[in-house]
Image 1: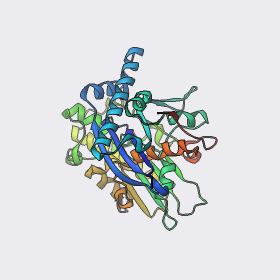
Image 2 (image 1 turned 90 degrees about the horizontal axis):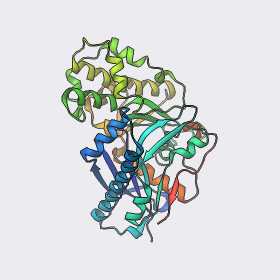
Image 3 (image 1 turned 90 degrees about the vertical axis):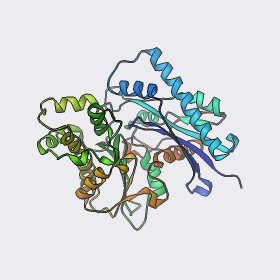
Image 4 (image 1 turned 180 degrees about the vertical axis):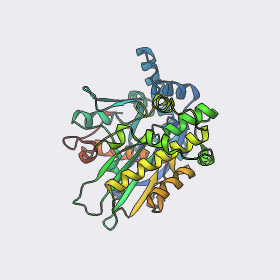
Length: 369
């Protein structure tokens, strides 16, 4: 029997590198076959971080980065295939999210921009590639995000349990999966995940992230600062809603800290950790008070201090998506493999309840091998 193999490529808001996963959707099941991670070279990471912090980008720089990322993503796919001793001809398609440079769904002329040239991915690998998933939803009046709730519904819904999926990347998002199939699935970005904590530890200690939350745990939550951070209008905005690192940015952090110079650096880190935990918890308590199970995925699951803060605010056990059969660092890569499958089969990939689109639409553009 021919296997229904797809590759998912995910480069998220944490700006660390590319997740490349090989997945088997034979008979509509979703199984992990293999996984490959490649960190961004320092040069690429610095470029993306600079752009995300508001630095201008010339057309030449934009075009070169688009090409550079396309080559990088293609190489990740080839490395994944080599690692698994799998021929490219056995893969139905690659679903490539691309690297978000800017997400702006609420302006007069809304857009969301992801780069990493899919023409190059397709040409280098010889595999049909599906990319540019967000703009069709925006064209239909949606936010273009979050797109993973449709995948969460397909894979993680339970007729006996009200489940919530929490993804903590640079930005955090939740998907609410009612056990009653007649009720709508709700999904939205809750606010910052790891991005502000990463910015702060980078400034203070020249580290990419707070390993295990070991720095945050040495500090104290400063309630006055926390209240100021939580007063941002995004947190009280009605759903559907989405955001990005271009909003919760290094500049946003600097502005909020400009009058708060009396705090120790470790206290700021702990407060940023608390901000992420409380904004996620409050979103769940407000929108899904009857939750039975909370499943966590994304890099934030490895921050022990963050998980402890989140658990304290929810007073419920936090489970890894590993218990549902998908490792927490592969959920989004698998989601974009699944979205590529949906596109090739002519099926919608968005959930209007989550994105605000006027209707379900087939997402993405197909680059035929």
